[in-house]
Image (cartoon, rainbow, N blue to C red; front, side, top):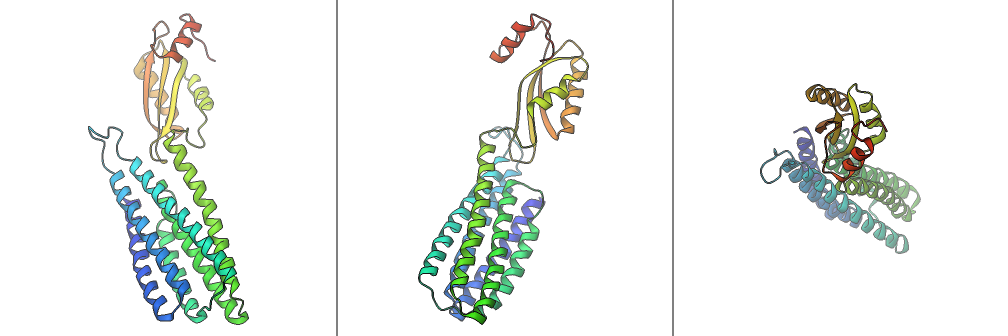
Length: 295
């Protein structure tokens, strides 16, 4: 609920500021501010998508989505980051064009709006900072981009006011956009590997197996799968060979995995003499000949 609320507050702040910025751009006659207003409207739209997806992701599992709706949050992060990539590329091209063809800028108007822009977007960035879903992190990246962008506008406007070097605005704008683009691409990579069910960061399967082998009564651990549905919670499924009481072994396994922040665990218990239909398990059982030892 907190993530939802943070995204909603950020959406309201961003949309309200976009309208304010658009009116200010027309009043001051600043094309740069009007362009940024359009960019911020795109930001607000993407944050609106994020809010919808984040809200949807909180729905409980049902007969249709038996794993739940957590992936909707990841889709929200993907949409938001993709818009961020596209807008960064557009700003870079516009900045290059402005370097080649400089235009007159209203310095005083830029300074006033830059100060307001830094304050508003800094507040929005505060609301979405810290731990949360990949969706919230994507929104936070948007806000950090806007804060940095307005700081650049402010510094650039002050420098240009005293030097008349109009090209500074475009150079600094392009620099910030390149920085944000690199971070956005990194964020997209995290989302892609999540959809591909890659093992979460900081989790080592061999290390997990080693810890499980240390449990008294565990003969073998195989067919282990560790994944995250939303980039926050981690789940695992595994086959365990044991001749001990299954309830006791299961509880010990869950305790070990809980220490590694793996909360949702599905355990298939097999005895040393049992035949398993899974291909990987057949290889292990055949090699064990009924008495499997640690790898």
